[in-house]
Image (tube, rainbow, N blue to C red; front, side, top):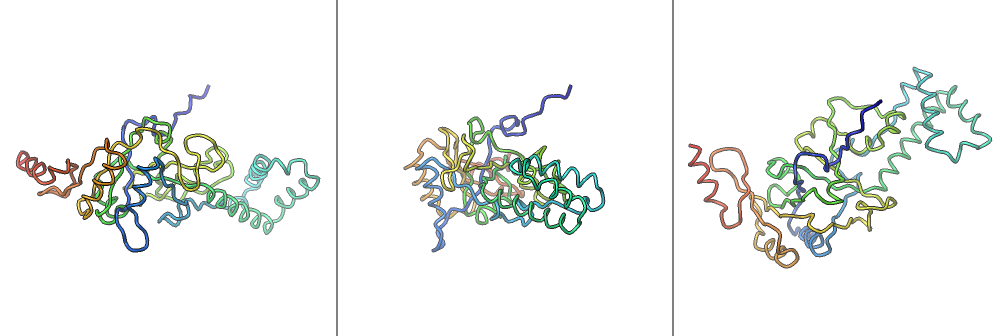
Length: 290
């Protein structure tokens, strides 16, 4: 008997909190402060388009037809996939003819696989994603996703029906070819696999859907936030709008904890401290460790 599958979601992970880095500024075109206002006021999260991410391979998988050119058994597995994923064609009178064409014609096989790749990417484009990490003091994350430490980091508790759905990204040294059997066994492989260069992010990802009812159901580009999902806001060490941040949180979510990330005085590290203690706490720690 096979062992039971382990739920790979955040619900089963050891950590309690997840974090999302974002900008907090007004650049004349986009007021990213409004994202926080909308999040706290309307209790909803903005989910991004999967093709808008900064990794050109992320969420853009493709089926590789080369193995099928070399191995007829791989072609047959592809036919099995076709039958399973397009049941409307199962009883079509021309289905046997089409399958024989795919088995015997390399050109038709290549066209078909390219078409299915386009269909898969189009299907992914109908989803939306929200990215998280367990680490709120990652210097590179602050630099890359929070406007070079001028932005903010939102803290979430995982014990709710939305954040507990986050799934870990798998980081690979080599590109993992997407197979028809693999996508049937693990449909999320196409949106939860990235190159090893991105492993510093330690990303967890929530996939939003317009069709699947439940906590990840999309209303436009937004997903509703459960009560208590957000537990705090952290300002970056270079954030110039701290008073405005405090004002927004006080107006729409006064119970949230506000902290600041500050540079440690004698090592390359960030510390998270209460807003009234941004200097003294790190210097006390530095003195105690010296």
